[in-house]
Every structure is written in structure tokens, then in C-alpha cells.
Amino acid sequence: MAQQKEENVVIFPFMAQGHMIPFLSLALQIEQRKSYTVTFINTPLNIEKLRHSLPPTSTIRLISLPFSAADHGLPPEAENTDVLPYPLIVHLMHASLSLKPSFTHLISKLSPLCIISDMFFTWTADVANQFGIFHSIFNAGGAYGMALYHSVWTHLPHCNTNSDEFSLPDLPEISPIHRSQLANNVKQANGTDPWSLFIQGQVRLWFSSDGLLFNTVEGLDQTGLSYFRRKKTGIPVWAIGPTRSKLTERAGAGDDRNMCIHWLDTCSQNSVLYVSFGSQNTLSASQMMELAKALEASGKNFIWVVRPPLEFDINSEFRAEKWLPEGFEDRIRKENRGLLVRKWAPQVEILSHKSTRAFISHCGWNSVLESLSQGVPILAWPIGADQFYNAKFLEEEVGVCVEMARGNRSEVREEKILRLIKVVMGETEKGEKMRKKACEVKEIIKDAMRDEESYKGSSLKAMDEFFDAALSMKKTRKQTMISSSEGPR
Ligand SMILES: *[C@@H]1O[C@H](CO)[C@@H](O)[C@H](O)[C@H]1NC(C)=O
Ligand SMILES: *[C@@H]1O[C@H](CO)[C@@H](O)[C@H](O)[C@H]1NC(C)=O
Image (cartoon, rainbow, N blue to C red):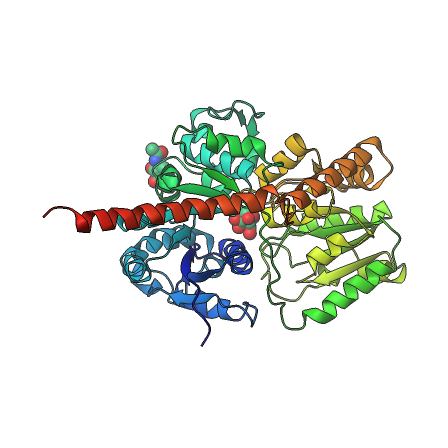
């Protein structure tokens, strides 16, 4: 039998792929670096699915809490936002509150060192409190993006004005944001709709935790980190990113990987534009057409991870003859100019390849960190969620990005895309500046993760501080228990 490690760390993400994956990376990172047992908690179907993506050598314990989607008026298999149509996602959020009794019971039995839970599960702080256990929220987004998210949901500033631009009262240092940078759910929020009721209730309670963990880097994300630090609550805020570790690759991914890497090997240094919108997003049919025309007209090399456009099943087969200009794929193949990759690409390997020069990205935070970790500047095309804020951050605060388009409904023109590709891929002053800055950021990230005898980077130090705080609370808890059992009757 495997030896039990002494302390138990509970990890509990919200039931959405975009939350589960970064939490799993965090869990694997803790497993690698610390001598704790890691217990990963979720609902039965999510745990079942996760079993297959854990590396076979992992000792992470998976525990499922009973959950019946049907009891909440959801389809019976609906345990993850990924299988739900948009209007039902908020139902799953409300339904997740029903996990509290079984979670409480589990914690009473496990008595863990700490609980690291999701930004949508703030009620877990009550449970932790009840047992004197250290509690932290792990926020998988960047601090800047999450500061804007927190501020916008708290104040709903767009409801108080007809103007398309507005400032955030508790973030005076950033430039105004535009209505088109709001995700749909917040754009339509008015404070009494189901989204507002759930999310406003959650963000208010972020500070009832004993600390906040962010998947970001101290030297990169100061504006956002200081937003959370200057709130009067005084709880510690730790930047522990980037959390990344190799998850098991999909079956058949090896061939796709080899194809991409071999192709990149044939290209000259810094000549390739990598294009991907993440696994959950796609463009409208007309946007896709304009992007294709611009890529072809640019004369640059590219790898494009393609998915069927809006209104088609995102997992169905990609039909280049239908959705791209006539003869597009044949021409780029003949000229060895570009590669269309269907569904999956080895993103980290592409970004770290010497041929890759820039990235057209939706600016999901994971992609952002992967790009910056390799010093690759970004052409942003944010589509939803916190992506608009991330793009703003990269362009205005970090200087490694230009925004190329916004959303999946807007009209975009080949000319604009083409112009920006030329700026970033060409020998322009702006392009050079972005590249230089991206290389500086790469060093900042590398430094944050440095793990040497005499030097620990900021992210590793923050992780140590986090566990020191948890251990110190546990000591206090024990002493209180001893003194109360020794006290007079
Ligand atoms: C807010 O929005 C909800 C649904 O979107 C609507 O039913 C409600 O009447 C709105 N409330 C106000 C005060 O406008
Ligand atoms: C456009 O993107 C948003 C944000 O990701 C998404 O919620 C919406 O469903 C998309 N639109 C369509 C028509 O799929």
C-alpha cells in the first residue's frame, strides 16, 4: 500500500472545463512539490472523466460528492457547463449550492490541512470556518482580469450610463472600458437577474476566505494584485503561477504533434504565425472567411487550429471547401505556406518552437501564460468571459499585444487583420518593441518559477507562504483544542 502522506489538501473546482483544468494543474503541482496528500473533489461524472486525464503515476485521490442534475430541472447528465446550452449554465451554478451538506460531511471526516476552492464556491469558506480549517480561493484567471471581473460585477457600471465607455470606481488607474468588452451575461445583467444573483453573491464573499491564490506572476500583474490587496479586508493575496503540468494527451494526438513540429522545422526562424481560439470558441462564418483571406494575403507562414464556425457543431468535421476561400487549403499546402490543424494542436510546443513569431489568440488566461512563458507576442481576438480584460491588460499594461478584433458577432475586415499581421510579423518598430517586451516577460516568468538551493522565485515563495499560513492555523486549532480540553469544567 502506498504510504499515506501526513497532511491532506482538498481541491474543489466549479463544474466547468475551464475551471477543472487549471485546478488539476494546481493539484499536480502541489503533488510534485509538497509532501501532502492531494484530494480532488467534484461531482460523479466529472470525477469519472478526470480519471482518464490523470497521469497514471499520480497519487491524487479523487472523491465524488453525490449530485443529481435532474433534481434541479437540468438534463440528467448535466454536471458540467460544457454540456449545457447557455441559459442553463446559471441553473447549474445555483444547483451547485446543494453540494454543501455532503461537502460538510466529507470535510468533517477528512479534517484537511486546507481547502482550496473555486471562486464560485465561496460557501466552502463557511464549512472551513466551522472546523477551523484554512480556506483559500484559487482563481484560475489573471489578477488584472479578475480585478475587472470583480469590480464590474460589484458595480454593474454600465447600468448607470448610456455611454458606451465607463470607468470603474475602485480601479481609477485603468482606462475606461467599453461595453463591447463585457461578456454577454454581465452586459445583460441588472442586479436582479439569475446571473447577478449568483455571481454578485459570490464575488462579495471572496474576501471571507483566509487568502486568495492567483494563477499569475507577481512581477507581471501588479495592478490586479494591488486591487485585491488594497481592499480593507487585509487577507493575503498570493501569485503562484503559472501552474502548468503535463496532462495526459488525447489518443491519437501523437500524429498531430509530429505533423506540426516537422512542419515548423521546415520554416525559417521567427517566420510563423500561430492561430488558435481555444477549445471552446469559434468565429462566425464571415469572420473566418476574412481571417483566411488576410492570412493568405499576408504572405506569412501560419499554423491555424480550425473549428467549424458558429451555428455548426464545434466538434463536427471541419470542411475547408465550405468555410474557407475556394482552393485555400490546396494553395497553402502547395506553397508550403501554412498548416490547417483540426481540433487539437500541441500548443506549448508550437509556441516554444524557434520558427514561431506571434500568436493570434482569444486570450484565455491559460493561452496567455503559455505564450508569454515563451516570449511570443499576441494579436488578440477576445471572444468571451475575461478574455476582453486579458487583451486590455496585455495591450495597455504589458505592451506585448495589439487587439485585432473583438467578439464573435462583430464585423471584421480583411484589411484591418492584414495590417496588424504586418505590424506584428514585419520589421516594424512596434513589432520589435512588442517582441522585446515579450522576451522580458518571459524572463520574469522564468524567474518566478526558479527553484534553486539559494534562490526561490516569487511564485514558489508564495506557495510556501500559503502552506505556512495553513500550517500555522492548524497549530492554533490544535492548541485551542488542547487548552479547551484541559480547561476547568
Ligand atoms: C432585470 O432583468 C430581468 C431578466 O433579465 C428582468 O426580468 C427584470 O425585470 C429586470 N429588472 C429590472 C429592475 O430591470
Ligand atoms: C459567442 O461567444 C460567446 C462568448 O464565448 C458565447 O457565449 C456565445 O454563445 C457565442 N455566440 C454564438 C452564437 O455561439
